[in-house]
Image (tube, rainbow, N blue to C red; front, side, top):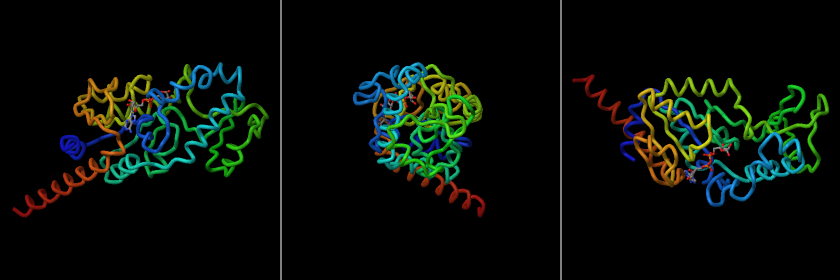
Length: 262
Ligand code: APR
């Protein structure tokens, strides 16, 4: 933990890369753990364009169920620690695979959502897009059983998330890759690291000579390239990591003060 805090405190341009595991502490199921969503449901029936084509009602039932679960959840200590590390100027951006909006809710400002946001919907025909949290329609939308239709053209609305087989929003992905190329450290929290192109992020930082810190209670596909691997649930360790980073920063500035007066 001390080494991770030291690396973070000394970094010049650190970013965070997160997956479903950071929200596990908020009670939101991950995808590939034993209780994960893809262990209980078949993603090809619920999270693909063909699934939506074939049975939009089933897909909307699944996404409304996920929206309800997420609305019952609150950000946990790990989300808040990341937001504080950004406020301290240590973490410059959070690149997330999560669609649950908990990073934004916990105060992260510079947030890149590679796989979209479950509270945004978009039209399957025109370019209509709506953030349900901002449009005050959320409660009614989540509790409705009807297929949601575009208020502009009447076509079906779909969740504004990236499904299997779909490409990621190119502008967000390009910004994420350029941040990774610039970063001298990436804090990887709660991802199995098996879904591409998102999973390239830690490798891009590593290839650029940057350091990789991983927080995960289990070994993941990223662990082999981690310089520091903190084997623990994120919600259990990130407050302590934040405290240690703050100590290093404060000691560092006290030392610089002393050097100035010598
Ligand atoms: N703290 C940190 N990590 C945790 C915790 C926790 N409390 N609980 C579980 N994890 C770890 C698991 O060990 C696993 O490595 O989180 C990871 C979750 O992996 P996945 O379920 O595969 O989720 P993720 O990596 O985010 O999946 C990537 O796949 O299905 C798509 O679009 C979906 O964005 C998702 C992408």
